[in-house]
Image (tube, rainbow, N blue to C red):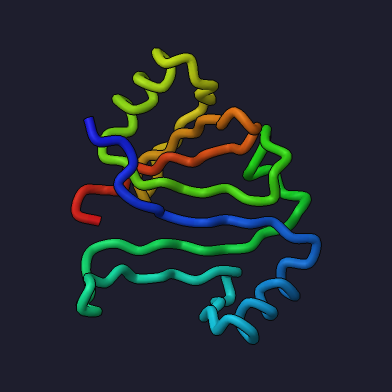
Length: 128
């Protein structure tokens, strides 16, 4: 079973999300949208579009999206078979969170790494 196939997103929290988004926009040229993030479309080695997008966003520091982690970031990894991977991680003794989520974007599950960071696993909808 192939496990991680790419990075689906990078999410950060900030005391002042708008100011931090503005900084990234001004100094790094990230096209931050009104929703507080940007989408980076994937390309091949020649710059031609391929299927896939990596999301990047900043949310409020008092949000609960990263709980139970105390970290200020979370990486979302694309996976091919979420259920099989979560099962394998449990069998390997990893701290897999019980909650999973099915949404219009695909299936999501979470595991805590040994440093206490919440890791998001995402199985995109077919063809995405």
